[in-house]
Length: 162
Image (tube, rainbow, N blue to C red):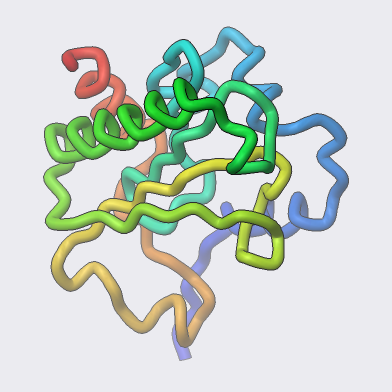
């Protein structure tokens, strides 16, 4: 049997069991290093960030700027802007990397699958025909064909160009 190395996973595995203390999303939002923190776009009530541990290249997240895990607590303005940011993300992904389809999802609470349940966030996962394979099932590994840095540069240009 051949080994397939995914050393970036160890960083994720080790962090899973640590107490983050402060919210990782709020810390990134408060920092002014958008490129380093993979923040692609900031708006009045929300922001768009790349997933540090993507399912596939271009995996983005949209979050409210306020720290909340409560979907019901979002104001009408926050909800409207988050939907606009989901649309903006799809347009940028289409322009930058031309996926065939998208999965968009929200996991409310840890029991529903939220990895970071303390700060509500929507996932946007670009999909391509035949992008699924046996790797996640057999080997608990994903193949992400493009580096985060390269994907960030492509998407940042698409977001900046409108």
